[in-house]
Image (cartoon, rainbow, N blue to C red; front, side, top):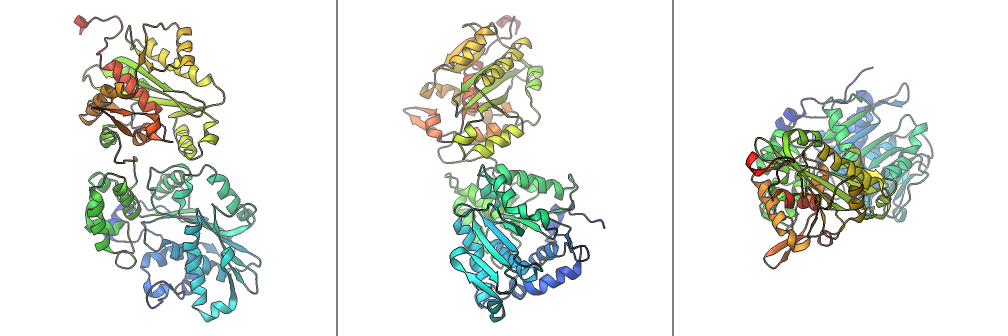
Length: 553
């Protein structure tokens, strides 16, 4: 049997209000499950209506796709993973409760555990309470199931099958043998360094259960996607777009088409329905329009959070009120495919900035070149980190691993490997004939002794290396960079690492000057950005290509 979970025309379908969920493989199994699901009551709505009375068609389509993926003859679940990305307040957790309770009712095994894994106790309660309410309001279900609120467990009195809701921040998931697993608010797990191991423990029981499945439910992240969430989101986009052929995985992603994102069509209330299929039921169009107006002028991050949560707009950078002014223009200055080799080919001269390097810090390097024909500045950056930072900075470990996978950051096992790699790149710039005759390497004024020693060993001299003063004295470079970025005179390679660093940067007013420091930026790393400012300081002096004089230009 052949089937596909791709949806190549999803943009047209969403805009037209048509379904993006494929029909069930086995309609009879889907109908059986829907008959149960539609009878479950939603107790927190006035009148306690059933799902059949209060749900939109997309809900039934999703339930049908899950239970209709089971082949009754072979006992195998043909679609094993489901991913639903939907805006906040579209009854995601309540629907999750209904799906898992339906699975519990239909389960043919005995002593089988069904699991809802939530990142926090509050999120866990959002799924457990509706499920318990569906049972308490129905005398037939109350006679069949026993509810234990204190451990968030519902157990079948005869078969001993159970539904357990686990909070990852308080409960353990080790040793679980769950046949069917639902993971709620997947985006939150993207912040956790141990999420992959946790999921492996939670889903390990499916090795011996061919009828099992996993459902990932989530809203968009209020920060740039990271970790396991970023990985899954991109994977299911590729499955949906036909780039990856995986009929055992189904992604249902309610997001705006790329053209609409570029045109900022998500700001038009007439388009809110695209990511809110429950519009008019659990979602109020008037409320969304009102809150868009209230948050649009805010600069504390509330607007970005509103877009992410209620319109599923992916946040590219973390923009706050004390952000660096250049952050507003950073994404617009990206040129995809601008590699170091491309920079060296296109530029007549290039300088290098270096910053950071502590054991639990990043060592950042930036190469800034002046393009031969246009005289625009082209920027490329890279960073290194010791593996120990993944243990000491758990809150940013998933992001660092993402950058490493993208080739924008290198994790090293021991000190010295990063320093040697930095010197190798500086030598590449010199050997390409792009480094100026003097003052081509800028480093933090406090000094990076190991880096300087390595450069001296590579035949660089004190004429080549310049100590760049930091703090308020870097004000000129900061202002120059933001003006160049805003004016289209500085172009970068669109690296996610640099976007993250730019989003982390916090400004501090120092008299008439501003400064950007690691202390003000908190746990977020900014070393490659600081390296870029060091390079800008040197480029602002209009260096000449090695061997050329001013008159040659």
